[in-house]
Amino acid sequence: MTRPEELAADYTRIRSRLVGIAYAVVGTVAEAEDVVSDCWLRLVAADADEAVRDVEAWSVVAVSRRALDVLRSARVQREAYVGPWLPEPLFDAPAQPSSGVGDPADRVTLDDSVSYALMVVLETLSPAERVVWVLHEVFGMPLSEVADVVGRTPAAVRQLAVRARAHVKAGAPRMDVPAGAHGKTVSAFLEAAGNGDLAGLVSLLDPDVVLTSDGGGVVNAARRPVTGAERVARFLLGVAQKRKWGAGDRVEAILVNGGPGLAFYAEGRLSSVAALTVVDGRVTRVDIVLAPAKLGQA
Image (cartoon, rainbow, N blue to C red; front, top):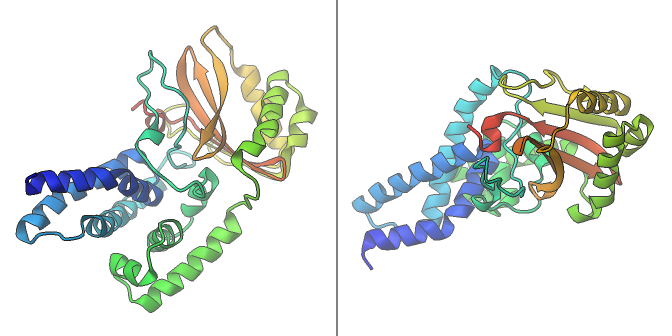
């Protein structure tokens, strides 16, 4: 096997992990894949100058640094985004022959602890805090090595880790049961919404539930988060009542970033994905992604 073939084999073996790291940092699959592709070219160039002995270690550092740069640039763009910006969901809905939509989960490997709600919380961290948290808490990288990635001293990185951990703890929901145990809540949620049962839907929502929808200015979506059980329930029922269901329309219960969610199809084509965060049998977050680019339809 030639050296280029060895490099390609090693990089292919770790590619899903590298895309997972990049996705956890930047929040979109396309950008994550671009980062990993770019770092492959950098690896080839670096190896041509001097043989890279540990391809995985070199690649993790390179991908993390590049993802940090991309996130810093993306933050400027997201400030001008139309309406709320939500991360791209990883979901297991089957591809439809007419849509050409693939399953992003086939391309990204993430720890099950990285729920969609957590991805939303990570958006509140500074770029440096986010990289430190992802590399240390999710991928187990020692803080001494993380310091080299972000270009900070070990002491500064420890402070970043403490701040990031505090922000995540305050914002992320307590997930005390497996995602599969939320099936009854999701089924009841669908039934109440489908039947126009306001009281039933309110009873399934946490009093402080938050609904966020991301249309990216391409499709209609709420420009601001909707809060409170009754307001969220009325919003969902209003959307359901306005929608005219045809033969190719359906809703499926799916997994979104390993947690409960729903996939909505219009005329056989995926139109939106909703991530539901369930705690103690009640829905605490509803995050709806309608932006076509985040559903594999760009």
